[in-house]
Length: 193
Ligand code: SF4
Ligand code: SF4
Image 1 (cartoon, rainbow, N blue to C red):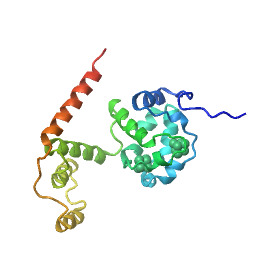
Image 2: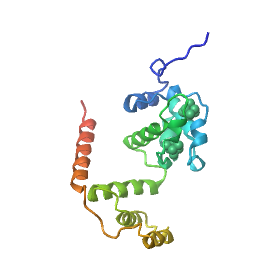
Image 3: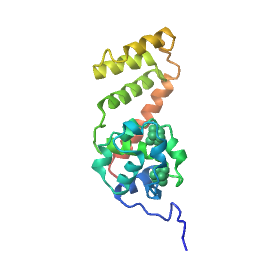
Image 4: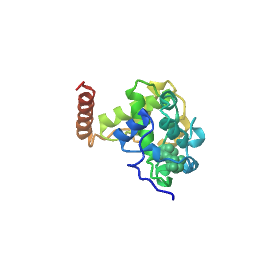
């Protein structure tokens, strides 16, 4: 007689799978490799490993493969994969977990421009309390040196009034407090117990 086993009954198969379960509450061992997540992912065409393959690599504890992958850095966090999974694996959260664990382990993102984008976006939000697109673009160009890339797109956005030339500082104090709290929590977490 067949038996349906719950997420609690299925133990993680590797140290990496355990880290994802303990730190992010998602049991990758529930995955039975149906591929529905990968089939629905709008970015899968650009990824080096489809979401289902990355999940499988985590199950096998293949840290080098997972942490050097481009997949999680390209993920747009749209959650289509999570919605489609018949086993209730939160695939989008696994993507976040892979990013966070990769950075904690000292792996550089496989795509340098994405690292620059994350840094530019976070410093922009911290300073202005919300995304100021024009400032974000300048900061990104300075970090990457790609000064003319997407210049036509920028001009079109300006013409349509989609780029504000001056920032608003609404919420900047609150954002600053949130960033400081997170930094303190991270420092505490990294202290030896
Ligand atoms: S949809 Fe769920 S069960 Fe299917 S491959 Fe993706 S994670 Fe695994
Ligand atoms: S959340 Fe990421 S991995 Fe999932 S479908 Fe969207 S882009 Fe693909």
